[in-house]
Figure 1 (cartoon, rainbow, N blue to C red):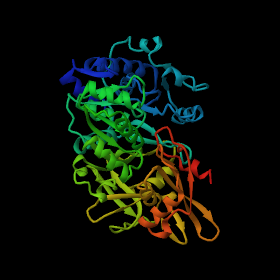
Figure 2: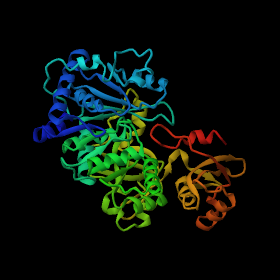
Figure 3: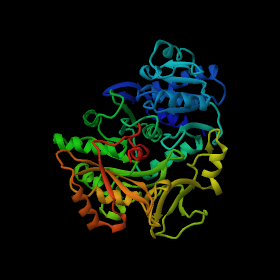
Figure 4: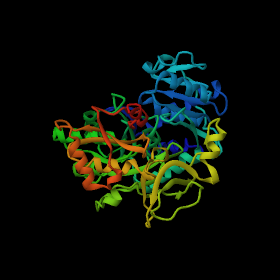
Length: 494
C-alpha cells in the first residue's frame, strides 16, 4: 500500500495532461511528474538508508510535490517543516527526526547552519543532477510503515512528531473523496496555505484523481493573486485557515470582484465563528466544507459537508459537524468514561487515520492513545444527532467561582458585537474567584473601541458570570505560522 500508487493511478489515465502549475505556467505533465519522482527516488535509494527521513524546509514551490512522491517511491519518510518557524525550531526538528537528507528553498537554507546531514537547495544545479539516473520502481512497503512525520506547531511546548503511515494517509485520502469533493481531472487546487501542513496533505486526494496542482508564484497567500488564479484555471478548490477566508472575503467586498472559478473552500485549523461564516456564505455562496482534525488524525475527525451549509441553521454552522467516514468520535470524562449527549468533556476518536504514536516519545504516545483512543486535548459535546461542538482546549477552560467557562462561547458572543473584528478570551488568576475572564479585542477599520458597548452586548447575550471582567484592545493578535492565535503570548500581556 505505497501511497505513491496514487500518482501511478492518475498518470496511467491522464499522462499527457497538466499536473503541476506555477501560477499560470505548466511545469510538468503527469507522466513527467512520475518520471522525475522515480528518478529522484533512485538517488534517495542510493544515498539514504531504508526508511530514512527526508526533511523539506521550503516555501510552497512546484518541486515540493516531486520530493514527496520521490520519498515514498524510495520507501523513505517525508518530514515537511513549516518554513516560517524560527531557525532553532527548524534545526531541532531536523535533529529530532534524525533526517538523512534536507531539501530547502534558498532563503530557508540560510536557517540551517550546523545541520548534521546533507542540505540541497531546491532548483539548484545540484538538485537537478539528482534526476540524472534511471528511474527506479516504487519500493514495496507495508501499510503501517511510516510515510509522513508531522511535527506539531509547538505552541504549547516542544514539537512532537506524529507518525503517519501509508495506511493513515490512504484513509485520509479516501475520507476526503467520500465526504467532501468528487474530484475529476478537470479540477484543481491552489496551494496558498502551507504545503508543509494542511494544503500539502490535500495533494493526495487531488493526485488520486489527476486534478491539477497549482502553486502561486508568491509561494503563499495573496488574496488578489488567488482570485486571479481561480479565474484562469477554473474549477478550483483550496484549503484555507479561517483567517485566510476572512482576508479573501474582505478583498472581494473591497474590490467588488466575484469569486469566478472558485468551486470549493475547505476551512479548518482554527475556529470559524458563526458571524464570520454567515458573512462568508453571503459573499462566496455555498462553496464551503469545514473540517476538524489534528496532525495526529490528519484532516479527518469531523466535518461539515457542502449540503450542511444550505439551511443556515445556527447549531450546525457553529458546530464542527459529524464524524468523518471511517472515524468513531466520543466524549470522555476525566476518568476516560463516555459522557452522554450534551455533556462537555474531552473529544476522543479512533480509526485508520489515527497516528501510531509520537516519534521517539513513548510517554506522550501512551497518554495520548490510552485505551486505543486518540485523546485530542480538545473539549466538546455531542448532541443527540451525533453532531460535535467544540468548547475549547482542555487547558483553556476558565474556572471562575467553581464554574467552568468555555472561551469559545464568550468569543462567539463578542464577535457579534458591532465593530469587533477578532476576539480571544483567556483566564486571569483572581484571589477571590480563582480566575476571571479577560477578552482581547481587535476592531474593524473605522470602528471606535467602546468598552461600554461590549459590556452591554455581553449582558444582553450571555449569562452574567461568563462576561469578561476586563477588555484589552490590540491592533492585531500574535499568530503562529499557520494563522492560529497564540493565546500564550496574549496571556503574557496580563
